[in-house]
Length: 120
Length: 110
Image 1: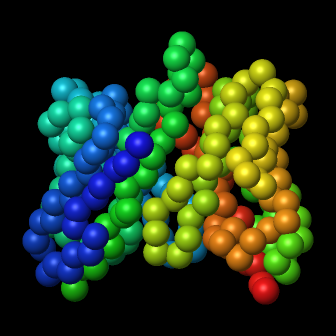
Image 2: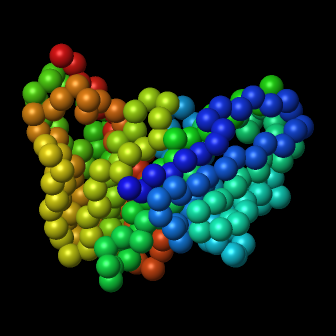
Image 3: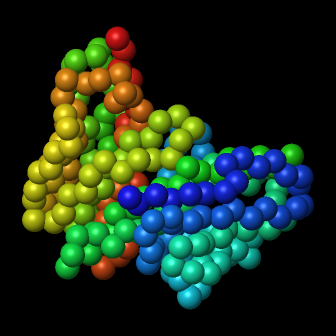
């Protein structure tokens, strides 16, 4: 159980265009989804927290108008990189929270396989 | 604030043991351990909660010292498949998000 899919796995786009990345929890309902960015050999940098039916909460320094997040249902969240530039090239990973142990707020996160974005 | 992991990298021969530490400057509610292989997403290993506990997963176990605000991951009789980068993610009371350490790169040689 606790499978998260992400699509596409790789995308190459031209500078100035927009790219949409989908994140789905396949066998559970995710109360919250997270979007991360990871540069080579570096840690996971949280970009935003996405709750179904409400606006995403962005981390400090992340441009909300550039990285649009929509959480349409308990199983789907999307990240749209608008007007992409070469510096946006990175590995983007989503995760979804699993309800966790009954009565305890553990919030285990299960990650999607990631999307490698290359902006030319 | 990002938790600190140590060591940053370790190289072992198959069958040897390793310990990876994760320390926080803030009071912890939970510690989550993940392993990531190159080009792939992190894979959940285990979670430890406030209250100080130990958990095991095959030959991988972990402890959580609430007083010291740190957790340790123990890998015994390492296998080639254990290679990868290990991340600890720290959770804090009232917050759903995790803050990840910088990672520990583990290399297992035959």
